[in-house]
Image (cartoon, rainbow, N blue to C red; front, side, top):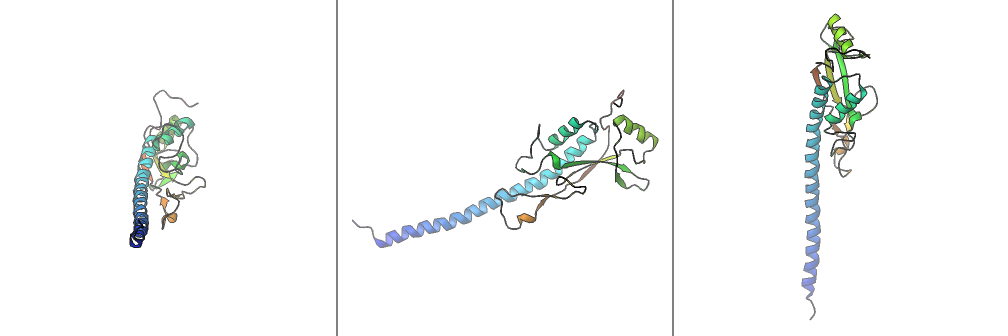
Length: 190
């Protein structure tokens, strides 16, 4: 019994058709996953800055361990490490700035921070619009290093994608009013 030549050719055609259809299907599936991940990153970036700014408004800025914990918590972590699904977004990329307000109402980053939250209370009592009074907290996501806030590049899961090389994680700036900044009654500066 010899197989018919037409039957053999049809089997080869089915394999080729399957390869073409499977290639297109996998491309669409991975593209859908990458677009969903991109939307996750864009939405999560804003939530990270909101959490960081809110926590910074209540946390003692003079304590390094408290500030490190604040950044980890903002990234939905309990310890060091990157944001899940975004390997290049770490605690180093969460920038927290303390701002004063000048007489014209413009927000100005403080050149030097007060020694402790108690000193900030004293500074703000003496001159609410002074350059040493923390009135607002700004949190943003920036690439590590440098004085300016350059956007963090977005990395795809697969390492390729049309037009993805130019995408960046949004800086997602959040500004909140400074609250206690870790001040407690009876506190002293060390």
